[in-house]
Amino acid sequence: MPVAPRSLRAIPLARGLVRLSGSLSPLFKREGVARGRERGFLIAAIVAPLVLAFAPNWLGLTAGFVTTFALLGWLLRGRTLYLHGAEHRAIAALEERRLRETWNGLARPSRFSLRCGTNFAALLLPVAIVGGRFWPLPATAVTPLVVSVLSLALTMELWQLVQSLPRLARFVLLPGLGLQRLTTREPRLDETRVALTALAAVLRRELARG
Image (cartoon, rainbow, N blue to C red; front, side, top):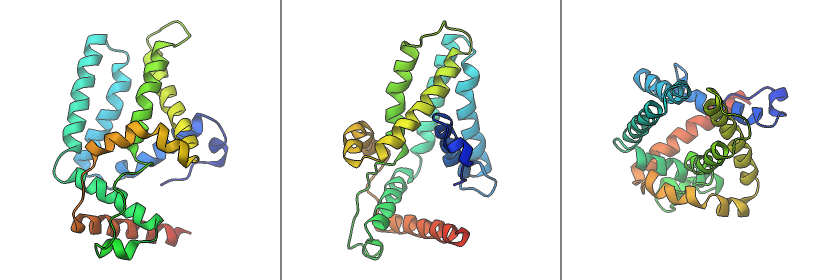
């Protein structure tokens, strides 16, 4: 993942947006994990809410539902949910130093993760609702866009704070951990090995850079 400039990493809110964009960047690189058609779909899904912030409410609401269901359909296709669980298991195996046992099927680390994006989404929803409800300035055409961006930045700040406090994280992120029962499935051993192989490739790349 790209490293943000030191100056930006010291600015509250801005550093969260930079970190969030950096975490998404592998999806949009030409040599990244997403194919060309998938990249186009993701770009449209991200840009659409920003553009529709200036559209009439009924149009924005309709497009929001369409985009949401399209994303859900994209996420739920094939073995995605099983590979999502396998990804979490592979990372947990690394952190618990049980890579060999997990590869051989002798250990099954949790498929639930405190750092999963599902937890971020579960945090973002109430922040965005409260932000829109109690926005202190007079509403203008750009207010929905400003509230959305600030909600993302504030949620990322909260996200990083919670991650540094494991005991608090398990409580605050409980809704997101519950949602992971929907966004992950118990992976098979071969799916776990796919995730472990991908993890090894990432580690080799990072170690080569360092």
